[in-house]
Length: 330
Image (cartoon, rainbow, N blue to C red; front, top):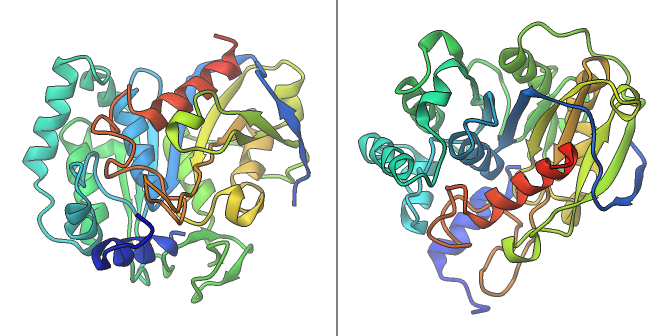
């Protein structure tokens, strides 16, 4: 088990480049005054695939998704070979098969009704300097969403000179360098762009003076996740005002296990959350050097936690949903 075959090694190497707030003590079950009409999700690379899985599986809960360097729902179709192939390198992802799978899961109630997606928004990003994920992959994500969303609700951004990392206004490595923690100073606020696309007009970003807390992730052990997530809490939300929630999913080698709070503190979400009554939940996946093999801490978008990984009963989907439920006290 400790020795990886060459295909798997190449796969995790590709995913590796997916790329200050003080963290308070862990809170077992925080609850807030949640505005359930304002719950969205985004992610980068493997996190983008997980964001799409959450959005489609729980379309009654989420009303929008942002995908940075990721592809369509169920792209890998449960196989490492397809994940390593067209879902990274471009080519035919079998769009009709992906749509048919979603419809099949809807009929069996494994995911929410796909009709919930019709009024949602999708924001999809691919940097011009991304050498890890081919431009055809996010284009396929747009094609998948076009089957359910109106074209006016889908934004595909392809003109920003950015590598395979999280583009920021001024945080991270030089825009041309792909290096830990995979935040890139590209003078482009990806977090702000996607939040505005998903939620509509927002108040201007401001200094993030709220608190970054560690919160329990129920079911983490069965989901190959860390015991705690990170949660950004603006003072308004801590004080009981109605707040939305945005779930922001790191990429491979971007969890707290690898980079501490660098992604949660520096990706750019918190500055918008502070001025717009928005909690930001940063779920955390665990790495593993034994079965299931996941040494770089990637989200499960090819099936290492089980065949149902892209449905409501998928271990990681369920754990993130349970963490969200804890925020509402349900």
